[in-house]
Image (cartoon, rainbow, N blue to C red; front, top):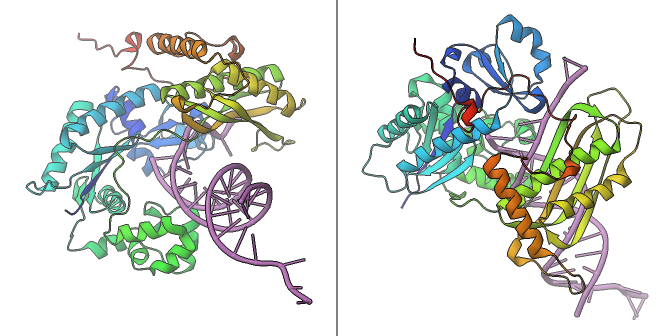
Length: 423
DNA sequence: TCTGGGGTCCTAGGACCC
DNA sequence: TCTGGGGTCCTAGGACCC
């Protein structure tokens, strides 16, 4: 049976989440900023029309934002994650097989839905998601994931499709591909765009018709698959069960640069705690940790970047032990006299916790530590993050990120729930 | 004043083994 | 005179994604 994929993409997702709880934003330019209120990471259509670019530093838009009264929000991840779950739950009603691809995208398998008019079906999905969650979506349909993605790009570009387009056996298939820039094809980024342009390939259609062997030589098997997919052969399958992460990291820029080793240790201890939680969430342990610190690369000052790593004798997810290792490494890589702007930890060599190879000559407190972490995680899930934390993570957190325009966590905190006044 | 964060996959090259 | 060959594992770096 021929595969059919639908790619569901939430429009301007973070901005749309804010709009659900603040309908006054309708028709206004709205942006959501990254951590530390650094870059623009979501824009309403009105904001896009003003020429505000994705990923661009917000402070450079200071005048523009003011001039056009753009509404600005700090990122409110708990809200977006919860809204995402609502959208995904709704989508799950429409197919037995789906893959949650990112916070605002999902692939749905519509293979075998032959008795249905797929356009009508997609429109009813779109209507239901809007009605149940308030989030507007776009749906692209095609015989491969890459083509479904391409269809959704086209559906967004041209209002005549009303946010739903099926390009399977489309009579104007080639013309449609020709209207898509090659860098808008899933899998083609900045570098490959440059390379392809140098060889006179500018559109998705031209990429589709490029010689396969040449593509394989110059763009590895990944590019090879992309071209096959553009030609209608499905190479990228639906991943319904999310795989355990092979690497987990927690890195942050600081709201304010810090100087002392003590503060760096606090920050890193917080990052380790967070990363360890993620590790335990997926029932894994790490066997390799890396810690890094760096000054502000955008500043015209003396730069310092350094990192160190440890391979653990026995893999673990025990927060205190991991913090200890990082502290020892920080003692080595820290250099006084610099203003540090960012630090982070990376866990690698992650394995399932039931596959730990115990050390012949080391006594292990494995069970005791596991129980302790389980209890801590339970309390923090129930009462909110950092209800219990390691003292080494600090209380003051001077390095904490800036979030000056934060909206409420409308859906995950009772005391921040929306109040509707009827007069 | 001010520039995000967290992932995946592939390849080349070196170390090491028999 | 002549100095192998095949394989695995690991790591760093580069590409991509959202």
